[in-house]
Image (cartoon, rainbow, N blue to C red; front, side, top):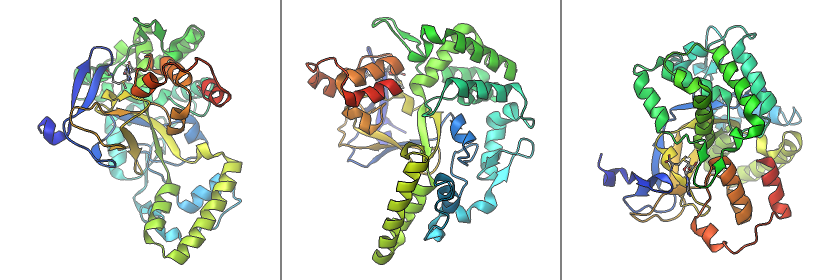
Length: 383
Ligand SMILES: C[S@@+](CC[C@H](N)C(=O)[O-])C[C@H]1O[C@@H](n2cnc3c(N)ncnc32)[C@H](O)[C@@H]1O
């Protein structure tokens, strides 16, 4: 496919490295591309707290009633318009790994996972080094989660089982994996002095849990740091929600009278869920690595955004008009975080992505004072 047909090219910028540049015009809401991940994985806490998702594609495995019952701690158990819940028609396709009993939404996902990585990670017995490693990770990384040691293990297993491990290693190396920015003297936050011991514990944990041959370059002390930096700078959050899917279907299909009932129910359910689990914890959540998408640089005034529609397939959507020749940028921060001060945004990007943002919004705010306001402190503390 030519770059014009494709709608974008990947070029190189001396400061930013790889960049995605549009070769055609996009209107707001246009799909720029969609992409399956190279590897994806549900977060460890999310899984532990009973968010039931396909072990491969992360699509929800619980019905809307099960979801709301769980998220409201059984304060709400009756849900109207259940027939609009897509899971109800799919339950008969759900299948378990015969050995370790993890669930998949379909035989296709089970087979894909087994062939790509699961056969090396399948553990029928709960007491084993891989489970210990996951527990160790949880003691180091509390919710809200942003990374995942199991994603790293899946990545290594994918290399081990690849028909061409050399090519798989090359694919992984193509993701930006620098641990520091020499020009600006920035080091990735996860690799700071205070984490040296934890990183070694994790590295030994991985070595104990998996026998690796083809991917061993990533398990030397410096290779492991690069791998953590790779996951830190390229890991894309994936969220899937049965609540969202059910509510979209209701909005499309219900009459206006039914919509009144629906709106009342949803308003009340949100209120209760906010009290019980908090509004940030409603979705099945994990992270993933996407090859094409990982060429996209950040802007605090982005023209594109990544969305998920029920599973781990990423859709890149234009959020503003994009002209041929424009760089396509997403935001590496949640939309609400873009309202924080330039100082706070830049601090977050330096610590998590080892660069100083010079986007148009940061330029316009370049004379703003370098201070943390009350509104900003939560983001700075949380990250
Ligand atoms: C997901 S990668 C994006 C693609 C990257 N340019 C590459 O060469 O692979 C994230 C990294 O790109 C660089 N980057 C992203 N946005 C940038 C920006 N606005 N200015 C400078 N560097 C940026 C940083 O090194 C960041 O850690």
